Length: 637
Image (spheres, helix red, strand yellow):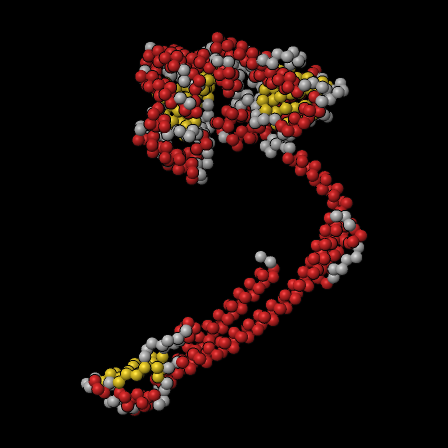
């Protein structure tokens, strides 16, 4: 809305309020005059001396002195002496009805009863005349002010039009047209400001260009780590691949191998802190090299490009990263921090083979143990070298049964609830160094070794429980969805458990919900066969699929482990509480236990207990620890 319309609207509102206020004042005065008139009537001595025997005569005596709207005298004994004149109703317009006041008086005489209402029409007419005069004065004042304001606005519009033209000329750098400013009066400061703007235009343009460079840098900066983004990395890589001189350097890829595990067990906030710390370590190690550039190129992958450095000189860089990773690992109780692969380059090297070789170098580094690095010097074209190394490493650890168990308990929320401890398998290479668990499982699935890996874990668990009777309680074992959906694996599992039923009764097999949803028929078969030998089934990461509730009806597992996203901030997230309560209600009717995972704070624990979950798991409850029997020995193969 324009200033002119706004002003008129405000002015009309103010005058309307003043008019209404005047009307209220007139009504108040009218009431005062009416009360005075009624008081005079009631105090009149004539009322006491008048003959009240005849109603009509009584009316004539009163009407001669007072204006009466209504008169009624009712004789006690003789109805012929009663008399009524006028009416209590009065037909008026809206304003007079609102102003109207009733001046009534009722009294009793020896011979009858008198009721009178005094006429107020003259008082109301006087009040209306006063209000009309007041309203006309207000209208006249409004018209005068509106005319004055319109003239002022017209003059201001001319000045604003000139100022707009002035600014347009300034934007077009027509400085000659600005030298003769016609702005004056209240617009003189604006004229001075525009003149100053012309003088500062060149400086402002230069500053803008600097700010544009800074904004461009910020747009290409990763918000979590502060490093350059993948786009900046790609631009830098293009300068290498398109160069024609003989400049050399190295490309290092760093994989944050524990990101998925930390996000799952501790939450995304902890994952972001983990990535930020890795970025800090990489940056601090690279800062001593003049031509080093660091980037975050994907969720858990970093890249470092250092120009004018040889492979030999880069060994110190790699060793420094490994040292800092080892130190950081001790503070967060993780299997590793990251793995580094390094390759040399020369200007003109093609990007795809260079990145492929660097990725292979990282894959090889992952097979060498926690925080290891590997340098791949030659571009030999063997693009599957990293995968081949992983295939060999997985086959080797399966053959050697190279795994150790960690355990993370589930805390029951009530004494009558029986839960279990979750076994977590950790794999190590021939040198006894732990390999990144998530990568081992992913590579096993890629190379078709997931079934063999799951069989190794299951047989190792059964062997451990058979060989050590001192181990008590039930244990959960994770099996991959790829294995769980294979009828041959399920048949093998049933056969193994059928021969060890007393052990089978202590085992709970955990399977990811997403994998089971791909084939409900196979999922139902898995649960049925496992139940037939006395074992139980737990569905982990429950609640993330669109068909989650079908499990309650069709699959009927023994436990469901809610995805950790439901526990996160459940003490303040009403949506999470609603869904968790709904899942608990449905599960309880079918005798399915509900376990909340990812509990990291006391507030989350208390909120989940109030929702009546059956068990709790998370870092606030207990962290994974190396599995030891009562004799203190570590469980391993």
